[in-house]
Image (cartoon, rainbow, N blue to C red; front, side, top):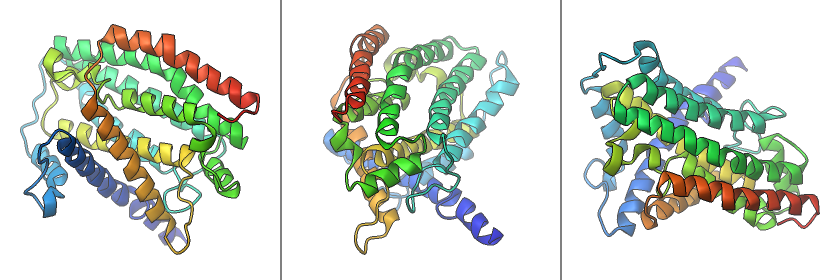
Length: 318
């Protein structure tokens, strides 16, 4: 029994599977993003460039790792590791190979909300500890962005929980399966709010304000290189997996068995669809200014998210 538990945690659907999934989703994102903009995308490393994300990661591991003299070395060196561990740990909660996560527990939805906030705090510390003007501006922008979308994000997450009468992600997936429905059909407004908040959480266009390359170089990541930058890239890929897995579980029915099709394959198809949607959104839009983003979140997205909760409480299911 212990060997089986270790296999689940380390191999499938554990860490190794999630790392492979992260690289695969990065490839899909880059390939689809390039096609929308009439470019080729990854092409040479592996079949159709499939191994390009792995090659980029390994290349960064062997690059020189520079540390600024004025930085806080302890924080500067530790935040890349934390940035990988946080989404990886949270993914163990998401039902990937069935309708129950590896470490699912009652209230794990609140834990996920806490992790999202903690990841933004990690980004802020990464930029602030660098003591670079570009990194500090990027970290402050990241904090301001989080303060803007965090409440609508929480309200969008609470919607499916109210409908399923549970704060467990696995229970929400099971409720959708038992009622033969998806959260998307019952709460399309909540789905839209959550999708927009995920773009902001992942710092994807039009919300890539904290790392705007045309304004502040690479934002909060400007001073990171080598192994540290490789860890940040891996953490971002894992965060994309986490975002797509959450959308799949809360709004698309999760890994529901579909005839002879394995639940994990159902999950992969749905989550890949979400990744394509994210890539399509960032390929179509231009970057907002920080003041536009803050005003949009507080003036428009927050009232819409509150309206969604009111409609759920009234039993209208939209």
